[in-house]
Image (tube, rainbow, N blue to C red; front, side):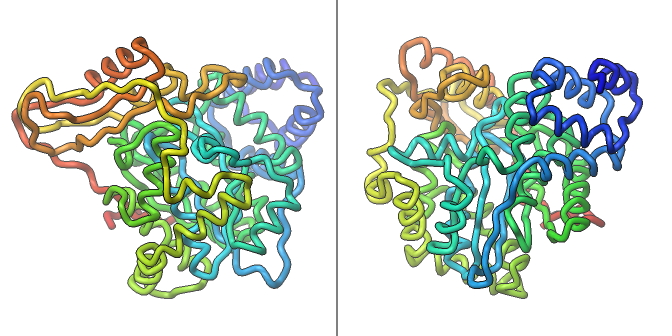
Length: 440
């Protein structure tokens, strides 16, 4: 197959045939298509999009490029959640053990940071010893034993997506609806699920900031899941401000642990419960949202979810002492408090410059090979609509050196705007299905 010819056709807006996509992905996984050619094709897709049959073929080819998880009849129904990514989004760390307490199994294949957004695997790996590179067999045994696992893609699960995911991060081809949909669904369909819940982010910190684009992505993935025997639900959620207060890998792991102990920010709890409700409905454990929420709240407030998280940490080689003492997490050597430059109302807290600053400070990746500094980041307590006084602390920068602290302070100055008029935050949760978009 002549790859330059495929790139040329796609760049000109011509669709590739399904058999060409299948052959292309097979050749790429086999190492016969170099990264530079695949990167060029990805960029052409960003500009030209994909037809429905192209997306179907790409998703199926990525799924068929490897093996799948398999569970026996004794394992409870499997459900999972996937977020399209945001700043401060540590929901998966709370949600997986919480839902596992409700007689469901959560075999979560998660990802690393993409662009300005953090990754679940990077956050968990900030826990000393935590191992995300599990084999399929180890993951299956862990789910059967404790009900949940959060792991990276194994070399034999959707290996095409594993390589494409890294290329997209390094070539600025992340924010593309068909590439997002195929990436997510190829991984999730490999988990042997009975249901999937999607958290589609909307706002300035999302890969698809506009609500209509996010709704289109939700509808696309709902269709991909339904056609492949995996009933899929979706929520649109706000990403026009960071979720919770902590932004940065170890800081977010600590905030997730606080949430599991009933001490986390209200926004984090509400998003977690909203997604958990949909998971319990998808898994058939409850029929009414009110009953599902009550069940989740009981598991959270009783400490059972925290215990299950501790069991997962220990099973994956991490230090379970982190539940009672988050100080075992990596600590940044330097901190700087950022204060309000004027009195007034917080107009916005833009998550994108905060996320980009974390990358620049070493907490994310500029290239596929970069190591991540888990300790750097921000605690941002300011929220849109808050009344603040000049000199009032609104955030703290956690850095490795003076340069990092200065970079963080500049990012906050650009991200947080204060004005004389009150401001309203957008709704935290918007409910979506394939037919409608409406406020929850």
